[in-house]
Length: 370
Image 1 (cartoon, helix red, strand yellow):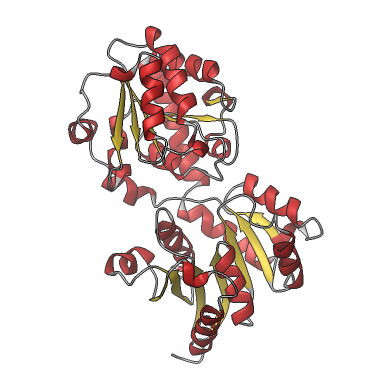
Image 2 (cartoon, rainbow, N blue to C red):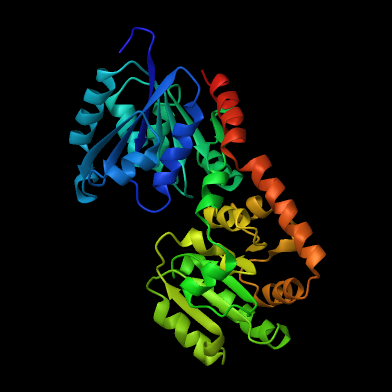
């Protein structure tokens, strides 16, 4: 290590689900800069796949279990203190509250806390903790909705210290992974000639696939013959959602695809992507669908509506009738109108949710909190 070499400590709770790509997103901010990135995972076993996906100069696995990081997390604090002293770190980026907590107690570094969910500072104890470290802590929400939740919990904080940096994707890399419409449908065992509405997510109350099934059932008599709803994901509501499809008489038109490894590779199988979540901090699947050239519709709540940003593609939360109307409109669009929607979404993807735009916004934020 040279005397001029500076590092950024990126501290992640784990790498499950979307959080590996979150690590990549933030490591990408420092490509072409004098900074090197050391990414530390609090939980999760060592993995060559994760090392490659982190896109960092160094990756460290602390390999704690979820149980081991409850309470005061003293061992983790000692570990992060040891790591912070081994390099010339300029600051720390910590994803989610536990890494923020450990980084502030274990180091003297400025900490940028990245928050991916609502309610992280609703507890009074967390508010007191954040206020105690307010001179050394700044916060980013992955959407304006999350940012506003943070600001509401910490009302005395200057606005410039709680800002938004949207999640994003490596557009070219995601598109390179996505297979053709024909290949995707063959892999998912979906008919090649059907009009298909797709949904991807846990079968969980937050995702509200019940509204999706109801809206599809209401629209089905007016959709092209043989239309299908394809739901990719698994979860505790699978049985009840299947029962709902039977109750509504559409079980033969609803396909439950289960958990699909590398699911975003197959988004081109869909003619329309629908997200009905009632509690969505952001909605990465919307970006992946947009990258596949699939029009998206979304409930008008949380961060999802910020991704879509078009009233013509939004419907009120839990309103199956409004969703039904949107499905019917989308299924009857002329090809030129569909192309205009896809082109508009592609432009928005490049302008708001690419790594290039995130770099500019991050460094603007950083300069104003130094």
